Amino acid sequence: MLSFARSLGAGERPPRTSIPPSRRELERSLLYSEELGIELPDRSDDAYFRWFLASLLFGARISETTAKRTYAAFVRHGLTTPVKIISAGWDVLVNPIMREGGYVRYDGRKSTQILRDCEALLADYRGSLIQLHEAARDEGDLEKRVGAFYGVGPVTTNIFLRELRPYWSKADPAPLPIVEELAPKLGLDLQRYKRKSLLFAHVEAGLLRNRRVLHGKADKGGPPAAGNGRAK
Image (cartoon, rainbow, N blue to C red; front, side, top):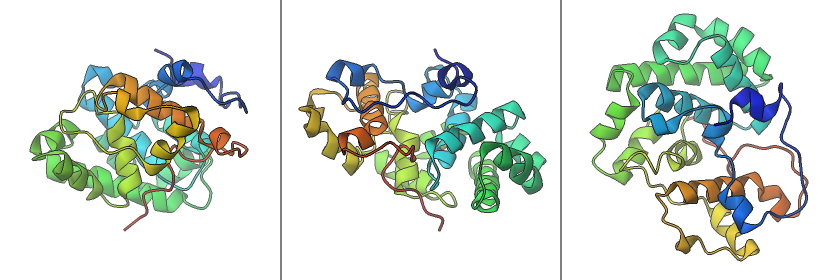
């Protein structure tokens, strides 16, 4: 599996293209978790929390590049568990973490959100996202529990849960409207895929990666979703 460093090459962004992808290319698209080197197939709390942290970053009104760079800063400084992040404290999250990632306007706000969400995860689920999944009654309740974290809206919830569909029985968020809008532009029938399959996750990620190309716009590297999870 590609690591974050290998996939981006010392902070570089993937090459841009104006050519719409083929169905086969979409099916082989790199998942966002894979690009960050997060091993979701391990089904471990460590991997799930890393993806939760990345999802919080992706859910902000910043570029994908900034979100990835900031996640890399968390990894580089060894802040990949709720306890370690809380122990580091707000000042460390703002500087060096957020500054190294490229946050400017939202560094304090995002640091506060991440700290509050780590505290809530520890208080409500003993720091375990596996326990959160087990506590959920069904798909809807799971989405409500994820959405109950401070600053997490529907899109951030979708970012977190969509790549967990193959691993969590109750993770099955509906595709974002932008995904359903873009698929027909390529003559792609999403119904032919099982939504909880890894193949569907790759197609979904591929459509999101190519959303600006398919809209006929220049790629400005926005977050991997249409919109963001706004702070409550």
